[in-house]
Length: 69
Image 1 (cartoon, rainbow, N blue to C red):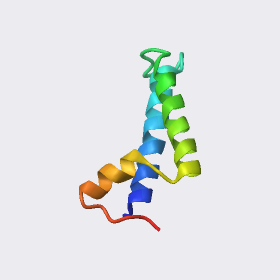
Image 2 (cartoon, rainbow, N blue to C red):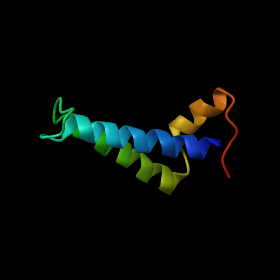
Image 3 (cartoon, one colour):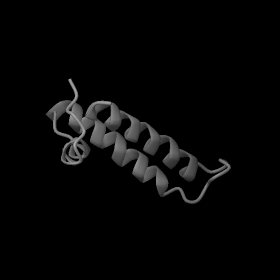
């Protein structure tokens, strides 16, 4: 797996889990504050698409994951 595939996997997982934890009526609801985390992940995806700089990709490279295309 390349670093970009892992970044997308993390982002998708974080968004889905935070929605489950933050939307009232979901079986795993904890607090609506989890929706702020969803917004943070979305904002990070937006900024990384514009700047081509992603903190998670830097962390993954340090762990030896090969760079994406």
